[in-house]
Amino acid sequence: MILIFEMTWRARAHVPGNAATIDTIARAFPEQEIRVFAEAEHLSGLRALLGGGAKKIAFFPAADPAYLQGKTHIVSARRFAREFATLRQALAGAPAGENLFLFLLSATSTAIFAVALLVRRARRIKGVHIGLHGNLNEITGWRSRNPLVRAFDLRAALAAPLGKKLRFLVLEEAIRRELARILPRAGARADVLSLPVNLGEVASAPPPFAPPWRFGLIGQATRDKGIEVFLEIARRMKARFGERVEFYVIGMIRHDADQAPFAVLAHPPDHGGLSRADFTARLAAMHYILMPLAPSYYALSASGAVIDAVTWRKPMIGFRLPILADLFARFGDLGRLVDSTDAMADAVADLVETPDQAGYAAWQAALSEARASRDPAALAAGYAALVAEKFPDFG
Image (tube, rainbow, N blue to C red; front, side, top):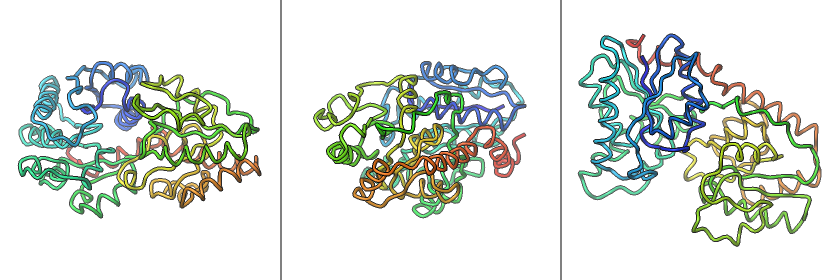
């Protein structure tokens, strides 16, 4: 039996990526019963995307992680107690005598210590994969001077002697390399499962290859996503090309954000949650996606925006970060990689001034190949082999 947990995020946060990962696990182990534990609204979103029937997936509500939501860097005894209780209750409900494999879709430092404690007490747990996402950046940031807090923060958790049954899982090989550079011990126990695509969403026809040329930024309008660079380029291009170009933020902005810089956009920015239907409709209408991602953050974090662009076959104009450079090296040009804001602006201007439909089609063909490699069905065999190698007692 496989027990899957989302104890960090609630509601719609990370639902598409989590659903695709669960789908991959289910395809990798079709003979295994799978139980998924998450907050009720998050479970509802997962169930809607997965269905669950033929894959033997069952859904169980878990404690709501609203407390300290989004504040994964805070070491909290209260959160540890909730995570430990969620894990323990799931184990108690599993049939006696079943070998168990645990998969944490995401994890705070306290969740890592909680599952490590339970593994020592429950011999039937044969392996644990612990997913690490954007919060992995905590290992390079500020650390508390309080020795008790430092003993239980993420850097301490990744360096702790957790035993052979626990391994970390990151979403890109480039992230594993960077983790190994910073914390060799953690890198040595880290595996890679690429973030899968959700092919069930792709149905809309591509936009006509004609002006107005639409450029999008996917996700929340944050500095790490490159919103300042995106808006600067939008201002330059609108001044130069007028109605021949349009710029969109396919996501949301904070309620307290200054509205004035967003006036250059073709669509008013969204405040609060954007429904998945609206999100995909806007994404389908784009010609290109800009990726001015901050290297300080995305050296240790995968990008859901990259996966969305690959899924919908939208050529990317992005900064030359390892997570993008690796994709381009493997599949060929998926758009253009640049090294500065000015170079990104020049690339956008070139695409507007000299549109090349044959070149665009070649980029989309390469994106189709990249998308096929991230299909849960394609990833499943590799993940099954990985588990068999790293956790030979499970089966």
